[in-house]
Length: 178
Ligand SMILES: CC(C)(COP(=O)(O)OP(=O)(O)OC[C@H]1O[C@@H](n2cnc3c(N)ncnc32)[C@H](O)[C@@H]1OP(=O)(O)O)[C@@H](O)C(=O)NCCC(=O)NCCS
Picture 1 (cartoon, helix red, strand yellow):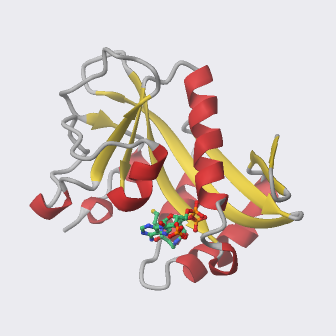
Picture 2: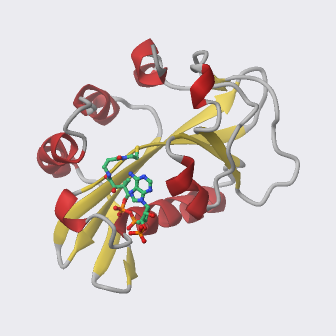
């Protein structure tokens, strides 16, 4: 468990967190239903790092890293997402703090590279670089190529080709654009 300035505590999610996640996601993503993905992750035995950020003891943000590999290699990678911060607590550093904590933990576990599909304006601040050349599980729409980002966790010999291999809950076409 890590404490940050501003009474923010970051901890791994517990089984009883599902109820607040079920209210957090519809509030943070009013136009996108991410609950099927979140529930599938929750019920899976695959390896994920699911972190909650508590502000003054109240759960206010969440981020998940899914551990995976690159097809045909032994490389250990992770995919970041989804990330959600309660609308009342957005833009106060919670999302960034949770993600940084997750990246530190993954690095300590020997994960080489982290991928994310999201806004480069946000993830670029955390060190992600646009235009990853390792492929997403499904072909992405051309206009999302910059949004497909990667971050090396200190390894200079990072993978530049191949395709991500991820647990079944990520293997739904609609999660990667129609
Ligand atoms: C995107 C999100 C996870 C960021 O978490 P957060 O705790 O609000 O963000 P932080 O406080 O760590 O960082 C704030 C900075 O990120 C940037 N930022 C925040 N939300 C952003 C967004 N949706 N797009 C681009 N940049 C964003 C801003 O530059 C902001 O800095 P500023 O206030 O000085 O302009 C959160 O706002 C959220 O849940 N939004 C709704 C859901 C969503 O869009 N999720 C996308 C991730 S999959």
